[in-house]
Image (cartoon, rainbow, N blue to C red; front, side, top):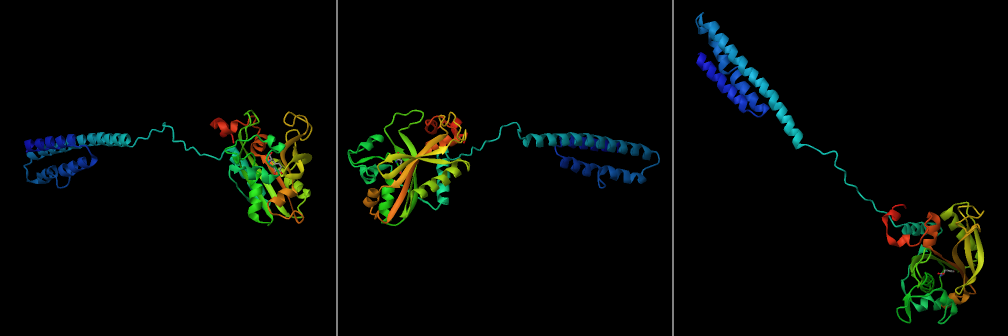
Length: 340
Ligand code: DAH
């Protein structure tokens, strides 16, 4: 009996040592220490033993049970720790790894300013017209009252592709195109886009830059409409406190022609480095559409009149955002772009 019990003990402890999971240990417990296990059986059968044998066998059985139980519990603790360690190892997250940065792009500053201008004019009932950057001499100059050899062509030194085709020097040719397409009907458009001139590049000049053209044609359109429109635009763009000033000027396609200044938004008119001590900053050219330009595009200039204006987008962006060199717009240095 003693041998039998000791063999059971060895067997059970052997299985306990081999077990690697809590479930395996539990199986061993049920098999050896459970109600139907061999040790319980021995203890149950004690009644059949003699009075001398009973305490001896009882003691052995109890000590075997105790030994198995002790090993089981010790091993159970180990297995729990091993399982936890394995779980931790397999589920590690390195919280010190840097996250993946999602770079969110944004429109270029020139695009932002163009969008802003479009919003303002669309709010005033304008639509947006576009024309080609590779343009005919006809639209770029002739239809705008600048016949071949007109001296005012010298103001816009051009990139010619053939004698009759050039890179447009301003957005004004879209005026002529829009009027021809409208066939005598009223017009209210702005035309944003790129233009090209044979200029030396410096802090304020670029051989390629952007303009927005404006054109309104209708009955009884007057200089007052031009002034009111530009005032509304300037207040939206540069702030309600801004005022405008019109100075006489010359453009072949407008008569009369004006240059338009905005009151300095830095000093408010007192004079500072931005306005060159004058209190005013020039922002655009404009005027009443020349009757001959209207007639060439098929309008009866005795019935219809119009105003037009053109401004440089870079100039507006530089003034509004304090950019000191036009070349910053084109070099695509993110240290610049990211600021806006
Ligand atoms: N096209 C002119 C330029 O590039 C600007 C301009 C002046 C446009 C007067 C106009 C205008 O529409 O009426 O210098």
